[in-house]
Length: 115
Image (cartoon, rainbow, N blue to C red; front, side, top):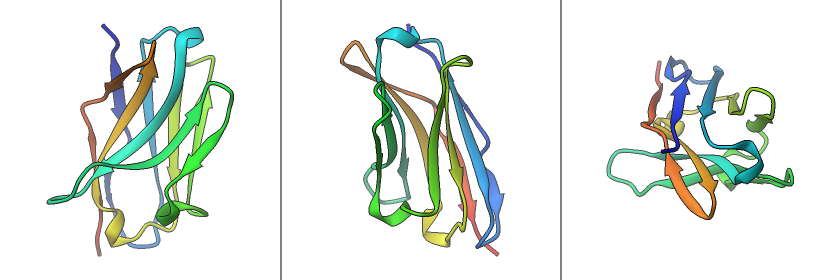
């Protein structure tokens, strides 16, 4: 069973920053991609950012230039640095791993951007 453990969510004021981290038990050599998704109340879950095993990056248009995804192959983690946060970034953020062609999800961490 693949485990994903997320950390780093919380409350931040508009314009502030947060860093999310996700540690996985998945075998590094068999991970196809890792990423972050989010779901706001009343909305569908949406892609935020992904990084493939080859290092290709993909960002949602709404976060380009503000969020940065990175991967630590030694710690087997994927991080999301979020800068210039806006109220519309408020959501539950989920870590995702594509492993042996199957999607695995973390439990989610709440990010609230409010003054």
